[in-house]
Image 1: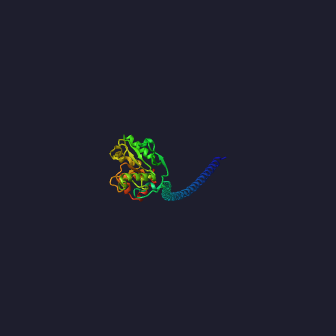
Image 2: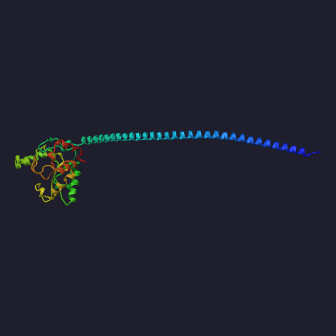
Image 3: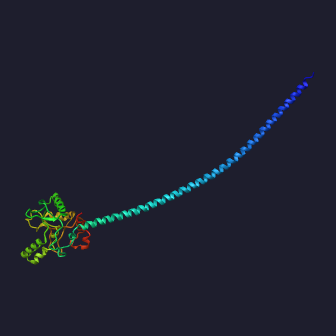
Length: 306
């Protein structure tokens, strides 16, 4: 029995089957590779498209952000300008309110201040027999020359007198009030006495008629210094007068009748309270109260007791 040919035949069959299987696997692998390659190609295309879309979106987003920033910046600048304008308007409004408040305050002060206090009276304006300062107070003995008679002064002026006399004393200068407020009747009696003693013409040169005296206002004083023997003449030769010339304005006083004035003889002892602001102006500009226009003087009334 010949077994060898059958064996070879089976080997051939086996090899043939193996080749066929190898071809089938190869073909299958090739198909799979082609399919995978196609899918990779599709994915690559989609990636390229997504990259392009992303680039476009990024570009659009960047543009949008830039536009938004520009718009916000413009809007913020506009708001700043609006706020500035509002603050400016508010400042103007506050200024107007402040001015109005100041005006109302000044009007209130003026309504409470005697308008006569800064009027010119020496042969100019007239105070009737019924005029009396709204508030009079006694000058303490420490500040007056004699205890024989009480001296009265407008109440708001007294602190200025006390401050001035005290300041002079601190500088080594002794200064006293010799006379102050006089009523209409007192001035009338005094003028009559002077007229009888010196004659009417002479008396008129140094003494006011009743109703024309600054003393009736309660804001004018005659000052005296030790060593004068109780008389006013010679006050301008004392250290007290020199001190007052240099410092009286700081306390609101001005010399009513300096040398060469057009009203009365030179009276270095007679000082009138006109307020610190006006007295300072007169001192700094070398002017006399009676040489100023009354309308200009009146503007200082609101500050007379400041």
